[in-house]
Image (cartoon, rainbow, N blue to C red):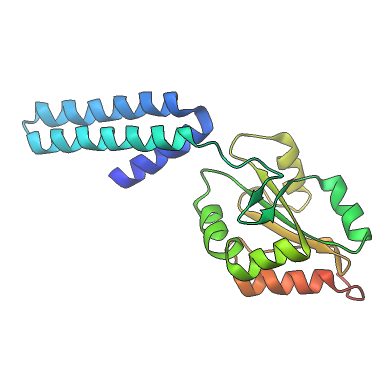
Length: 195
């Protein structure tokens, strides 16, 4: 439970800022401490205080690091902000495009990014011959919501691959595998393939 609480406070810090998360974490820690003292469970009171303190340190450390800006290289990959109108132009020019939409609160997005999108094979393609585009839906955004609706999707994660062989896009499953992503890259990049 403590780990979940700390994770939720980290998500709150990304959405509403470190100060809000610290205030909520302090209130939560005080509540745990108060309930434990009233029931004369001093070990629980100490644990509640430690949890609140650790959460505060984690939030302060995370709050000091700004997220990498889009259009900056991350692990050698030059991510661009999602630009739906640009995808069609890139595809007509024979390019393959990978779209990645996630959010700070999306655990599956984090797993996909760490294990699949961040894998050596995928990163190599994103550096070499696939244009990576990314959007962050941590905070509500009508443009991102409208884009997802075009694919009849209303949740995250969302990943799709576009190219000459797939001008309308290949929507990938929510749980990515390296094989599925590489297969979509190959299919989308084929000039004579049909969608």
